[in-house]
Length: 111
Length: 115
Image (cartoon, rainbow over all chains, first blue to last red; front, side, top):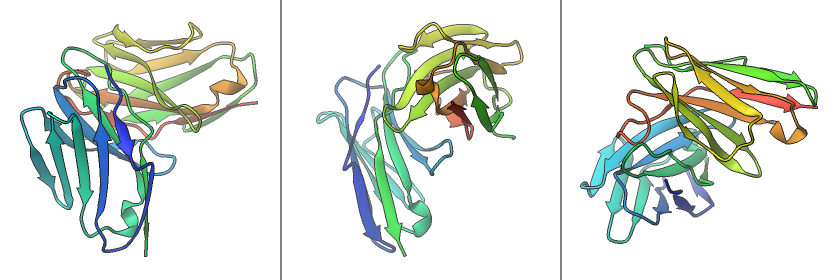
């Protein structure tokens, strides 16, 4: 199993702006998952993108995956104050490997 | 469908005591994973159970143990509590377990404080 590394560690934007956060990993993956965590709560699954996919959309979320660069990005368009949270990526290898989370990107969206 | 339920929500214990945390997964999910989250170490994987068998284990001392019952409900136990065990303990369930394209569904955690 491997850990994704999110970048930046923290991001502060105004409502209505777009937020982009990046994830890098080291070895080949089966899929890559993005999760959100509001303060003191459990993580919420956002998107799972498989290794043979390049882009995936879900509402205001857009995830890209570049397996040649071993990186992924999460774009949140037209951010809202409610998007304030920590965002984690989790690369998942093949076989029954455990899912390891990085330290996340802390996003602050100000009204 | 009801989500993942963790009980209790908050717990205060004294050093040296032991504690048991409970997790009820989403109906139909056979895998339950446990994570410890602290400000200093972030999210750390404890173990995963699938069909009552421990399938993966993280790097935690033997004081941390778990089990899964036939109805997929899981418990984790920490014995001889230390101050450093103070953390948010998160449980997550998934349909077929980690490594099988099954996203994790997390509960809201048990906040354990050791004094």
